[in-house]
Length: 56
Image 1 (spheres, rainbow, N blue to C red):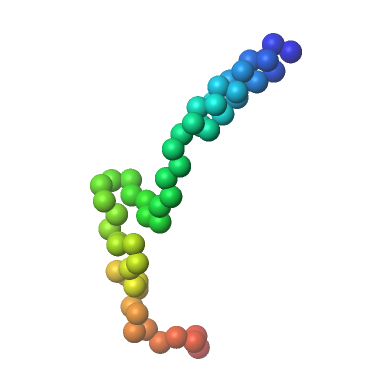
Image 2: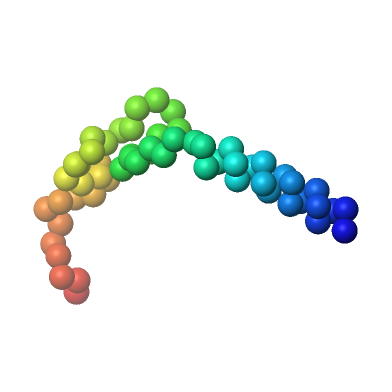
């Protein structure tokens, strides 16, 4: 019973701090510095855009 109360209190504290956080919408994510590709890049560096399409 005491564990449930402790979990409830922790959950309440966590949810209270998360709801007050600012929401940031983004299309890019980088762990180190600025992202490699701009927002509307045409293809990845390792992709050949002139490759044949359609399979077989």
